[in-house]
Amino acid sequence: MAIDPASAASAYANAARHQSATEIGGSPPTAGSPTGPNFADFVQDALSAAVDTGHQAEQVAVDAAAGEADIVDVVTAISAAEMTLETVVSVRDRMVSAYQEIMRMPI
Image (cartoon, rainbow, N blue to C red; front, side, top):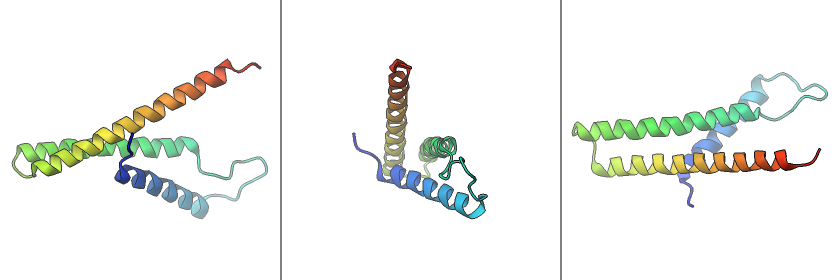
């Protein structure tokens, strides 16, 4: 499965932006506190980017219906949204699999 370069670049940019914001505005780490970015925030940003990609594809389709966009733009936007959705589903499946594996571990 191929990953859309634009989606990957967007995810990396979000991670870098979040990391730099944590380094600049964050408080100094204390003993026992995590020093990296919050995983929940990273996932939230990635999901927001995925939703934005879907909204952009919808907007381009509406623009094409109104005669304001080319069919090439529509196909490109829908393809990007499809790849983003496939990536989200793949990550979800991996997370569920990891959770199930953890639950099978003996205590």
